[in-house]
Image (cartoon, rainbow, N blue to C red; front, side, top):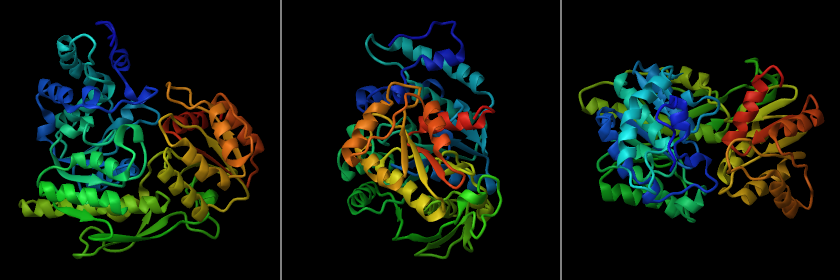
Length: 471
């Protein structure tokens, strides 16, 4: 690995590191992504991760939203709460937040961590990799949260769990939101194999909250919990939920108005199955649309229940948080995010079959539109054929494109070819998202819906474009 020059700026230093998020094929093996290098980096920094009360969140889908919900609820309870998520949508500072605010002192924090990184670089044998982009940002989050004396640190796993950089922490509770097929080259070709990688975050004696419902991965998580003596709280066994979806989101969600003849927010009915609920006394509104978000909220509430019980057992009390207000006011970008009306424009970062299916269900039950138009671009190493098979029959027009940043984008012509194999129809392909947007916008009527999905990178490009004056 060639390193940036010694006098480079903090951002140049970070962006010059090995960044697997931008690789054509993301590696996943102990040699490149093992925890030993991360442990050495944390030791150089004084091991701040060992001082933090961590809520550790893994899962195929829903881990970002669940992390954000837990962090918001803990902040509402009066706890100074850190949140680490990835990837970012528009600004790298989004990855490290305290009480909902992205970090201001990003460059200063990076400069504070840099000497430890450079010491490890000096010790790294030729041909091997020093601390990576993701490892450095993870270390920055641990350092910042320790410096700021957060009372809770919600850490979202980047990839998998067992080998992820966040897995050097000592969690107060571990959470696995869901298991489905994604990153199969790295994590395995069966749900059991993927579950085994996610279950790598389970620690002896540390409670686990699981939203996994499929039998095969559920059994793996249960077995690992038994082997490690980790108490397990499971969806459909220890807690459950019911969901009433919103209606006619396209009419009012973008401006905060109530939809005509509809309801702008869903309603969540959460219930523990083994004990009275101590965190949610009544049904509440849920601002993030979709049954999958209701499941994420239920997992988040179960995690708060577990934390409340552990604090009570230790002689402390977790103050009651205003859950109703938190879940009703939550915003989490690029998760069925309505950014415009007439036509309705929805941004969603769905990038695997399960998240695409959740998106389709939400569009069907919560949006009443004349036609649906799709702008789609995605990433290599994904089940592209599976995503297209789920999407194509649900949209009247399709515009294929690719995002500009990184080598992992699937060429638009390849998407076009796969779609023609699946449907016999040749949808247009555009080399950049600006051209795809222009074509879709020209075709869409006021009563239609344009959905942009397939990748965080594509959602970020489109959000930035639509936020500008030239959209």
